[in-house]
Length: 168
Image 1 (cartoon, helix red, strand yellow):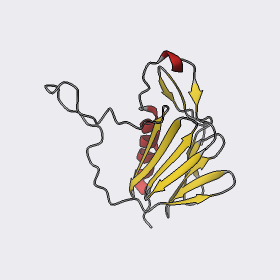
Image 2: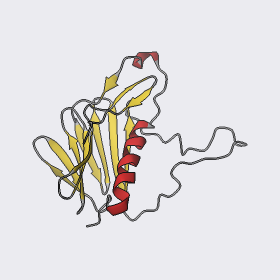
Image 3: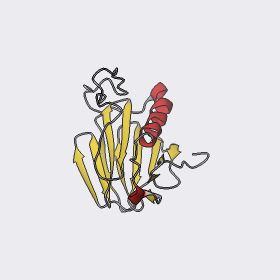
Image 4: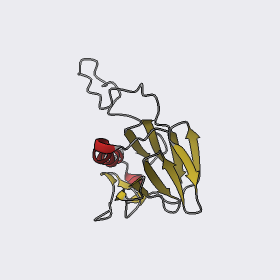
């Protein structure tokens, strides 16, 4: 099985996963003015290297498209969109996609369930998705924690917040 976080890619990919989660825009909606956060896992759907977790109305999707790539997306309203990669509304405006390659072979990841969490793993890394509340943690094959959320992902009309444990 291939690994999606190896050698020189581990730090950049861990950072990319964090940024991807933080970049999901949240529409300004007075009904969502209060801070909301991921709660317990209600359901998980697996489609090869794509893992979709639901928590209430929210959807958290983790994709392992290649051995050195991890993508984390959050949709507070349950509708996964990709506005950064959608063509602009104005046909005269330049396109500026963030993700320009999407024909990866797949990461060869596997999902294991424990009483407390789901583990998305390869030969050299494990992403832990706790069940209640949903939080994420990335470890290498030896079990060394690379990063860990200290709180669930939170959102409001101003954006999305990810809080990491210091020293993880």
